[in-house]
Length: 240
Image 1: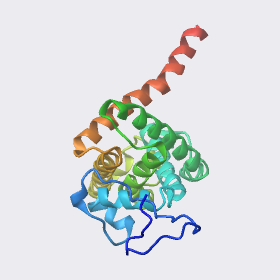
Image 2: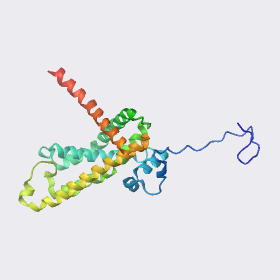
Image 3: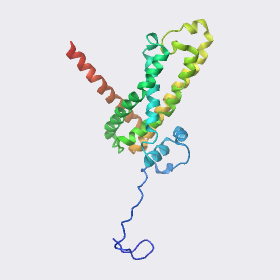
Image 4: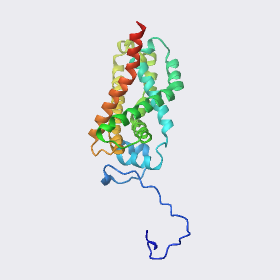
C-alpha cells in the first residue's frame, strides 16, 4: 500500500483507518442512472432506477405499510372471488381484511421472495431475499391503488360487491357502466404491478431484460403453488 495519500502527502501511520461509504447497488443497466423524486411516483414509470435507489438506501423503507395495504387488498379480492359476501356481511369482510391483512401480506411476501430467490438461481440471479422483498412490495403500489376502488364499489353495489349476484344490474342496467370502469381499471392496475415487478426483480437479480424477470416470477409462482398444494394433497391422502 502506498505511504502517500491522493494529494501526495505522507500518510500518518497512526491515523485511524479510512472508512469509505458503501458502494451503491450495481445496476443491471448502468445507463439508466439515478433519479430524484418521490419513489411512490417514480416506481410507476422508472421501476429499475427507483428500486435500485431504495435498496441502496434502505430496503426495508415503507415495507411494512406496503405489506399491510397489499394484504388487505388481496384478502378483499379473495372474498370477492370466492363469493364470501353470500355468507358474511360487507362490514365483517372489510373488518377481517383490516385485522388479518398484515399477516396475510407478510406470509405472501416471505413465500414470494423465497421462491423468486430459489428459482432465480436458474438465471444466475444475485439478489438476496431482503432486496427481493423490497422489489415485490414496491411493485404492488399500482395494485394497492386498484384496491382503493373497493370503496366506491361497495358504495354503489353494497353486499353484491363480494357475491355473484346480479340483482342490481337487473334493476338498473346502467350500473354496468361503473362496474365495468371499476373492474377494468383494477385489472389494468394489477397488470401494471406485475409488469413493474418484472422490472424490479430483473434489476436486483442482475438481468438486463425484464423478460428474464418475467420467467423468474412465473417459475416462482409454480414453486409457490407446489409448496402450498403439496401439504394439502398429503393431508387428503392420509385422511382417507
